[in-house]
Length: 314
Image (cartoon, rainbow, N blue to C red):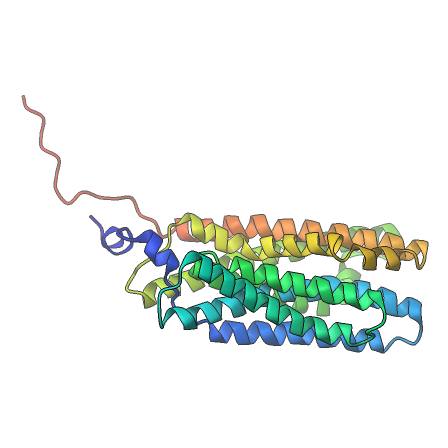
């Protein structure tokens, strides 16, 4: 038997359920991310001078706020569970209730940032309710007994956000290089930019999730999660983006519909952005899963026998 088999094989399920840390750092990072997205949305919305621009600004800010809320809901709930489980063992029902409740409380606090812009209008109530729902769903996901995977997916989601932020900062110069003054050329360049961003984000998700899981393995005496969970962790950010897009199109559809009524151009823009977000999320999901699986696959060596097989009798 190899050293890897002796260390990792005995209790793979127990290793998946055993957190490698309390997750406070990740929870703090994602809380800053969520807070920044919500306050940025509030500042953008309240800075508009007319109603139409206020509506469109709300529609543009909604997807980012939902994505940040669902990730933060899961990471904060995971940190709460890690702290409570150090005192006593939590049952499945108790674990799920605590995780969901944590996400709900966080979601309500986040919703207040948007709802208090105008407590009499339904528009901000819809946005606030969607943010609360996203955070609650994220908290519920933390209730599954795979804390290492959720922790790795959380860090990978932060990496995806950083990649997207950096690329968007340089989006203008990059599009100028990739396209000409022709409108169709600009549209094609924008599409390729979206695909490239999804590819780089997926690679970042797979690599970061792999590194986090390997670090957790080293800190737990070489206890490892089953190898398919590496692919799940890499796919985690893309999966959360898909859930966020579903919430945007369902719970927040009234906001998008109202923004589309501002003008025909705005309707086309909203439809284009919606399709681009879904395509990007799917790319991140599949590339993250593939890259995470390949990364752990490179470390798996075939089993070897210490004893030689007996020679066949003549």
